[in-house]
Image 1 (cartoon, rainbow over the protein chains, first blue to last red):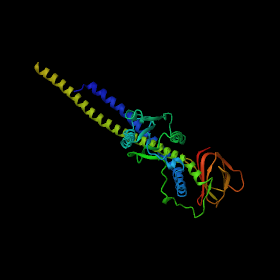
Image 2 (image 1 turned 90 degrees about the horizontal axis):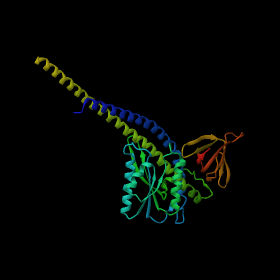
Image 3 (image 1 turned 60 degrees about the vertical axis):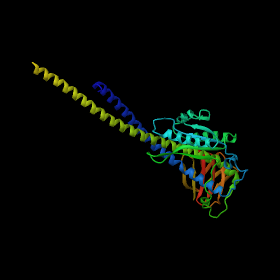
Length: 293
Length: 83
């Protein structure tokens, strides 16, 4: 049985841990709201761009000579996995879920005889180096970023596209966690290069029958929009990730606070029992001493 | 009135009814009034001019990297950066 003093110290330490987890939970809740707002604010651009891409895709036939981002390199050998994680831990299984999804894909590709390269965006993805020490080609520094801006996503996109143009890889996949609710964040992987155009059927939107004039022409507009489309997809992923991270942390810290509460209760009971036992023993000693006289 | 929307990846900057907007297209500026024929054009970095009324000074907004679409619903400008 632990001594009274040891129990008291332990209760104190669990209490201060609980204070920290409670504070972290509340901070995460506040940040989650902001991250969600940012994710919602980014939607109009994404949906409009997608609409435009769809209506363009319906008009342009993609041949071998088409833009490389759309037509692909003609090979399917080297795959780049872009793994977007957070910069901080203590967010439950958030980061490990994304890393696990990426590792599963990497394994699958390697079993199929493909070459896998890994692009890390976020510090917490670095655990993947343990499994693929030589294949991590870039470890993109993001620790200075407080709230994700489009410029940050653009920086990653420019880097990725430059590598694509240089022939470093043929297909790129993006891994992040889609935000569903504060409780549920689903890790997903998606192919972003070559660009998959939205389905053509949905594309026949309200042209109103009028002939649309293109300046300069369909092909060059499409070529201009493709990198933008990739950038917006990466930006969207980063925003979703930010919201997911906070949601995951909030849930994890809520659990931690509750567990600390349970633990304090158990320890208090143990403390009180021990104290009671000590008092009883002391009384018994006094009484039996008095009787002996 | 022309329905005009200016959107950046971060947010919807403008969504309002205006008289005319002059867009700095890659192949030259073009003004868009109500009932303009459908156009899709890329944009060069420059200032977009927004005329709220027939007469009066235009409001200037610097935009970077973008794309404009005119359809039956009005004018939509997608820009990477505004301001």
